Image (cartoon, rainbow, N blue to C red; front, side, top):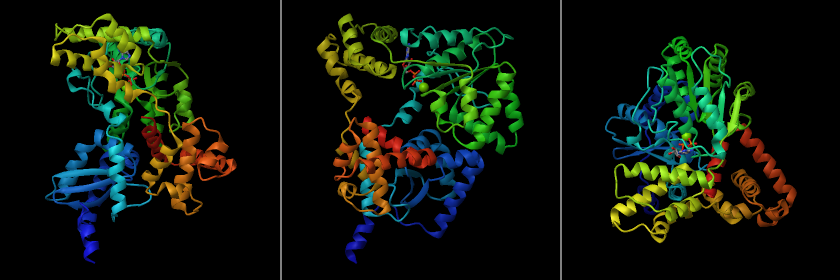
Length: 491
Ligand code: ADP
Ligand code: MG
């Protein structure tokens, strides 16, 4: 008895009361009313109140991705609502709960699993994406449609052209140079590329250029589109919203892979059709081609693919050198003593191959090194300054053992459970997910994977892979989970 109460008191959240449940219910209802069903269920449907402690409300979601998204997009609104409905609270904490322990009553293992997940992934791409350095956001074309701010520095002059992006760049210039009243040639223009390869830069450049010609532009991220539209629906100004959208010359939508929800998609499709049919230009960016946007329905995909689809590839070495040089030149406007010789530039360009964002990071390291030490920037010094950046970015060889460990932790079972012959649902699902991940993340054959999973037959592995493929296509919650695990294993 005393043991168990000691255990309980070590848990931060105290259990909820009926009043708390009622207050939480009001928070959820208000969020739903503000955001609409689609946005609400995409991001908040699985947000739960796990308890309260002191002045803190403890909330939980099933995936790291959801946590990160809520934190970067909705945290202020969520905090405000929670504080209004729960008198006396001043803090909220969101944690990732493990998939097997469904909800509220917290157990000790649950707590451990959370900590592990938190520690393993200290940063998250989504969060990085969104927390753009604020000083760079210098201008805003925000209007009543909820357009996102534009970054002045992301213009055509600063966009360097190489083999990998020349087609996209040419198309972008063509689109931006299209005269008023001319029928757009490439509509929609759909640009896709991996993270940090210049999509947002190119989109902003098109927007700046078009605005400079006195045309009306709106730049939206996918979630702003969702939010703006749903908010308009709620306020019964949807018609107005659509009409205003149609009153513009160029609609730019970034990161369209995040667009979700049936009615949102319908509206998105109507908007696309209406704008294209009335000769307005649309420019879209995503991290994959239209055909791979699983969450979009066929009609939307085919409309997106109906204009010009261009991919931007990895930055080649020469382009990386030029981007580094450009970054150094702009840093020198504030730090005239910042001097980087050609061999250091060549070294950085050879070492950082991933993307433009990491090149920015490397130049910042060099700048910090040179201003803090005042010493000459040798190749050795540069190597030390960017070492962790290189190491962190080297593509990791994923090991089956790591997959098993991580999946076990994530689902709150043991690795031995995964290797065992137990057939309970709580173990079968993580086991199948682990086998699936082993197939897609490693080069191991099915028989080899079977052997590594407690001596199973290759047909069992194949079955698991098919099963998870099917389940991921049908269940967005599971897809988030699997995506998250993949990212954690590869980062
Ligand atoms: P994405 O939207 O594709 O993830 P961004 O457009 O945010 O990538 O680019 C990441 C960083 O790399 C930005 O600072 C951007 O200015 C820079 N960058 C990418 N490609 C280029 C390029 N061709 N020329 C100059 N800077 C680039
Ligand atoms: Mg981007």
